[in-house]
Amino acid sequence: MASVTRAVFGELPSGGGTVEKFQLQSDLLRVDIISWGCTITALEVKDRQGRASDVVLGFAELEGYLQKQPYFGAVIGRVANRIAKGTFKVDGKEYHLAINKEPNSLHGGVRGFDKVLWTPRVLSNGVQFSRVSPDGEEGYPGELKVWVTYTLDGGELVVNYRAQASQATPVNLTNHSYFNLAGQGSPNIYGHEVTIEDETWAFIIFVFCLLPSGEVAPVQGTAFDLRKPVELGKHLQDFQLNGFDHNFCLKGSKEKHFCARVHHAASGRVLEVYTTQPGVQFYTGNFLDGTLKGKNGAVYPKHSGFCLETQNWPDAVNQPHFPPVLLRPGEEYDHTTWFKFSVA
Image (tube, rainbow, N blue to C red; front, side, top):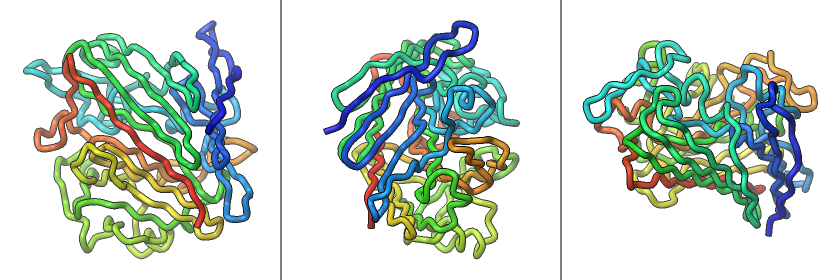
């Protein structure tokens, strides 16, 4: 069983409202989530000696999340990842979004779901957040009702995303937590061993200026073949990679399927990710530069955290051969991701 406690985390400026913190605790995990952006601010996991460490990057106070920062722990929407040139068509009508990461629209736009206050509801083993994204918000068509539910079951954090639309709109929701299984504030993630399951296909999104190419390329025999465990630091060095920021195409099933496993040998901590989504964006914190001050005085240099953002494929709204991303009236968007922590 999990317990849930509720507290004030901070006040938004100019009377913008109160941000609350919800602490979910089981015998194996402790997770803090705030109502600003449905953001995971802390996640404590025990190592093989039974010592707990916080394994997500973030801030101790609300001010940290209100500054310019790289989506630490937040829910991303209405559409995660890139939409090429910030334009798409639905039923013949063209829509234009803010270009907030040249030359594309990234992670929902200038004020995405990560930068709004959500309405919380406490559950017996977790918390559900809801909001209504109005028609035209950030350029997207139709009103969208959204529910994000976090529940704790032993060593497993479960995140469910649901949405209903008043008119056809692209929807692609994810969580942007940055993990470091050595403990947040550790200088890098090079000692982590990573496995990503896929159907021998990885979708390479880097073509020109991070424009999604629409090309789906096999991973076999490339630096992107992570089907067998690789130690991250050695792998980046061997292939002379700056890091990963790539979408891996998973099984096409809408059922729960294995996505990724990360093992930190020194602490024994293991993270396994399962999802109903068709893809995962594996990102190794390539743009972190040490300028942000995190929890307990931590700084976050390049490669000090990794993300496993379960989601649809990038720019799916403009790629008819990708898994469908449009949600129509009368349908329900319903996806779940499981983060399972253990020791080995």
